[in-house]
Length: 274
Image 1 (cartoon, rainbow, N blue to C red):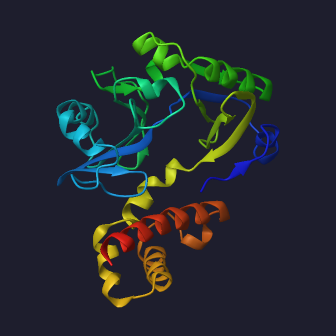
Image 2 (tube, rainbow, N blue to C red; image 1 turned 90 degrees about the vertical axis):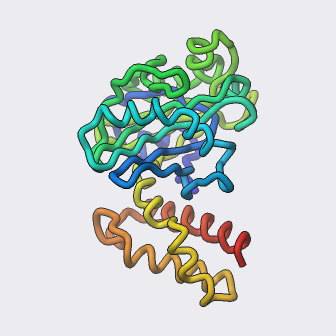
């Protein structure tokens, strides 16, 4: 799903930078909450959630913390606000210190009417601003690797929030062009070699529009074969969804990422409902 790089040096070769700004990457699961004039909706990275399809109980977590999320939403004068974050904590994932802590939602991006706004809000009990923890500025690849290995050795979030020492997962970087990158462990117990990948989270709002239950339901009766069903849904998304530009004008890796995520959601829906 991600565009992979076999070494950190290829970050420089792939796209040069002057300065990278970094925040701690947490080993949880991606989630978002969309507020508009009709109310709110809860999403994983690939699909809309519900009480039945809840993604490690993230849907119920949002309901339990809805007052704080609404208070955060009220700080922006916009018709639509989307709050993105990492839902992390006990039993959501394995292999990092954050996996042994109480579950919380660590916000890493907010869009107000499709415009990304600065993360300046104060922490709530269970809704956290990722920039309230240690951040990083790197001007060269040596600093990128140095800071990443520091996080792999000890997660700044679990140390600050819970006074728990343990390994972290990595760092999410943003370059001066707004492109996001992540540096993370290659394999547990081998932190010196860092894997780098482009972060496509800026495409999530388009994917949310693609992965609508009504769209999946619309084509299901017409297709007995999963291959033709996937093709029909993906082609409808490409035709009907506004990606900010014609789909064919997106970068090749962006098109591949979008179709990959849609396909996974379509396959899951087909298996559950056919």
